[in-house]
Length: 546
Image 1 (cartoon, rainbow, N blue to C red):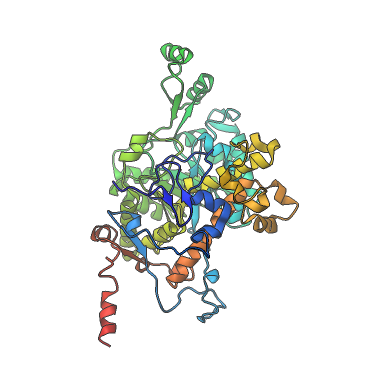
Image 2 (image 1 turned 135 degrees about the vertical axis):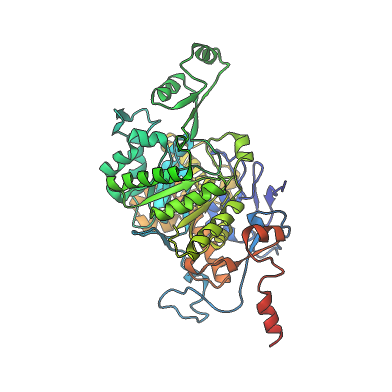
């Protein structure tokens, strides 16, 4: 097993827990006082692109070992001539070919194109309590930065205030809150996407949204995710709430209606209940039946009025992957998100997350292979997003390049939540009257923050960028967690621009698989990316013979 370093002396960062390939701790806490790379980038922004203490240091790369088949064993190719993808009005002169002129804007979709300022989409933020607590900074930050955000499954079903009568939603306050929060600052870039699982479909979530919000909201069918192979889950510590969820039609484990279970709860031996969703497609016995059922559901959603429909699938095997790509393409869907094993979660069985499913790089490599197979047969290929352990700009570049030209976005899950956590904690200290509202966890600023500043204007590198965007009067209404999200995304955008400029690619569409090399033959074999010792060899020999 590969062991990732807990500290980075060059950046001055440290992981509280065990770091994963994504650079995030395996267990990311909302009350963390720092200071992993993503945590620090939420405050310092672009400064985190460079080694610390400029003027008194020199720095050298520590990433010289590439063991096993993983994204770390892919490296980005730099080029020494040319420029592709320059925006209209720019020349190929050195004055125009600068990294700030790299366009990170992207669009995806079939008949209707959805634009984003950065090729990022969030993971599904559903019924877990941590998603609900930090929705405001996440949604506002996504809207301000201009990238899509996903409302995950079961949001209506677990809402005690929601009213559902005979399978029809009459009232859904939490869903309304999530959509309206995003739309407040939405300016045409990004989108709000709402997932449907079995229970959501039964509860009439699609009908409620189209009736109340029209086709401004994108609807997403949910097959699974990278962190688990069963439906969505949450834990509840309240017997009354567990009984409510059971009555709503959910699976609750252990069964709160059983007298012996209630006795165990009241005695203190049982402290929580797990609420589970149902598996889909269980009544189907063949791929053909699955295809028919899928197309019928897509047609149902279109008849309701949805013009943009997406699909999220998890780390299943090759058959399910082929189904997802083929079905989504034939159904003319707008996006297929493919989430690899090892992905993040707010609630999943730990050993399931550790041992089930196809790891991201294997799954994504196969997805490219299948997409390319269809394209070479002159078949339509759905736009795709890759997810599963991404947090930084280099991860985004590699995902886009590995899946080029079919992949338009990289999914960031836990990484996007970190700035919401740290910004809310800071707001709880600086604005004590809002501590409960923003779910702040600190009573005072920790040294990791006070070393940067004492006020929001001092602490967040992009505070004034956000103020310029919303105005000096409105800035006081913007959650500090949203400013932190914006700051992180600005750092990621700048880092992505630098990597793209180094590859001489000045827009997202020009990124290609040739922009990567594999650092061992196993990774080359799995991904189809050229092995470092063989990449560009023909061209190199031709140069030597000139």
